[in-house]
Structure formats: structure tokens, C-alpha cells
Amino acid sequence: MSISLYRTSDLYFASFLKTKGAVLQGTEKEDFKITFIFEDDGSIKELKREYFNRQGHIIALDFVDEIRSMKSLTYMSKKDS
Image (cartoon, rainbow, N blue to C red; front, side, top):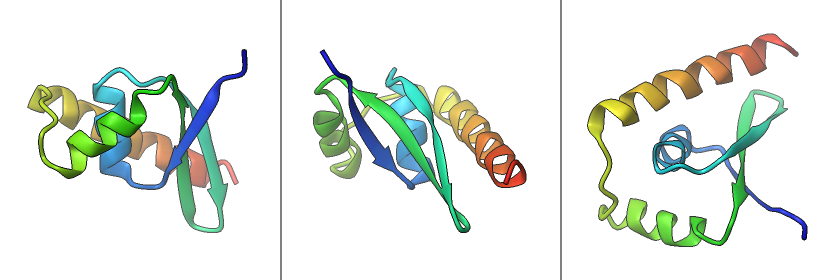
């Protein structure tokens, strides 16, 4: 069984996905744009709906921690090129 992947360059949505438990597979860099790559077990469509309809409930400090973590990952990805 192959794993479906989901890509987003939206830092805050990526942080939301991480906070909700989505598995980050890695990043891709193209020019100055970083794309976050997640495993999609079929739940990302629903998480995306929750996020953009402002219905997703998460712990604020966990979300802030993930934003910091994703920003660090973005910085490292840019620096590695």
C-alpha cells in the first residue's frame, strides 16, 4: 500500500496539521518557496475544511510551538541549499 502525500506551502496550515498529528515527511525547496510534505491517511481533507472554516480546535501553545518549529525547519531548508 502506497502512502498518499499532501503538499502545502502555507506555514500556518502546516503547523495546524502538525498540531493535529499529521506526519511530516519532509520539505521541498523551489527558489525561495518551501513546501511541507505530509502523509495523508485520508484525514487531511477534513482537517483542511476545519482549518479554513475556523472549526479546528487545538491547544494554542501547541500551535505556537509548531509554528516556531516549522519556521526553524524553513530556515534550515533555505540554508541547506
